[in-house]
Length: 323
Image 1 (cartoon, helix red, strand yellow):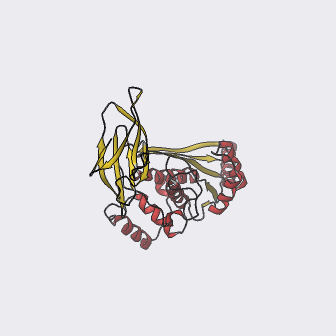
Image 2 (cartoon, rainbow, N blue to C red):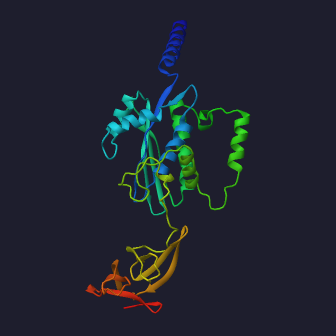
Image 3 (cartoon, helix red, strand yellow):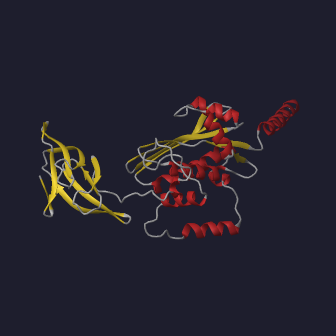
């Protein structure tokens, strides 16, 4: 019996000793820029989520997050439009990472979805992931925080509360003050993220209107950049020109069967006139040109009715638009 007890005692010591050898003192996590899928520029959202993950995953003395400049350098070497799992493993090994965080952000209209994963480079598996979909960015960002807590818990083998880094009472008080402070009217998380980008003097390398166009490194500081208020319809065409002979350009837009004539005044688009068409009409495009050489440009609408052409032109005469 004593022999068995000695054997069990020795095995316990061996397990404890080898366990201490297997455990790492510090882990390295690389946060890759999330791939974006959207018709509009959402780089501000990509940068904001990346910043959130990096700051919340890091634990002093336990988890180091790879510097952004090192990540950016490796990303430049990867010329694929979208990363594959093989690319993620390759970048992780080059940066000597234990784990890599990667994913995608999709924005269609007001709908935003987030898909993120934590990849264990050595074990070649992904045990932690997050998927969130919402009509509001305020509902997605808490999922990012939850994702970061799950990552820390998984890496350190602790609960979310234990994985949270210790902060001083003064820092906690300062954080509580920040959280409890009400946002100014009309302020959104998106505007806060953009404001933070302005403070860092860094912007997006793609156009704020068309993402395939390359712009200056600080596009949010461009003096010529302007965005209108939300328009309550789906536009199918737009043309610019002086259509009422006032010496100023108007912006003429169309939806399925209506014409909207706007003029930019200050920072707003002012609706000068809406010309309603018939419900069975289907507008295809709009142009502006002085085709009859009257000195006043006409609004030319390409339209069909039950697959039959019924295009027309409108000219401004005596205070109204006539055909």
